[in-house]
Image (cartoon, rainbow, N blue to C red; front, side, top):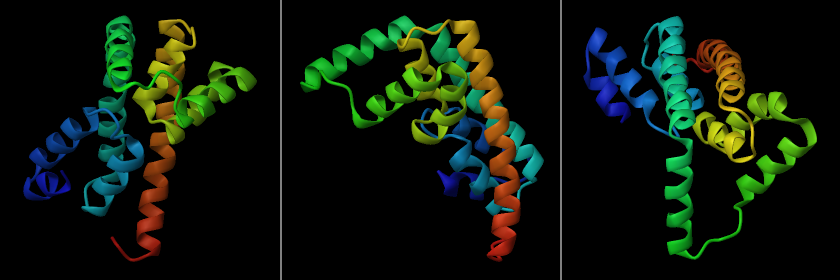
Length: 158
């Protein structure tokens, strides 16, 4: 996918990065460093990554019931009824600290979209999940943008 962004030119490079950022599992932790390493504007890359990831949080919130039903059927077919290690870790954070801390910490463990889905599975309200995951995404986008710019300059990649 990085090759797709590299082969694009000008505005199309940003469009390609945006389309990739919408994909589940490709969070700001991946998209922002790649965009910055390719020499794209860090601020634009951060905003694009935030918007793409936030769109998926909203989609997951809107279609939560359908996604959860599909996921449960899929897991049953594979014979995996119990929770995964990630889910167990996420549930512990949820029970100990609640939604605000879960929303801030879990994107680094699960990914933003999966964290939103897990929060909904744990019983949080959709508006609260969308709001707190949005705040978390803003925080992580800023952290990753600043970290990528200064980190990549430090190791002479940009």
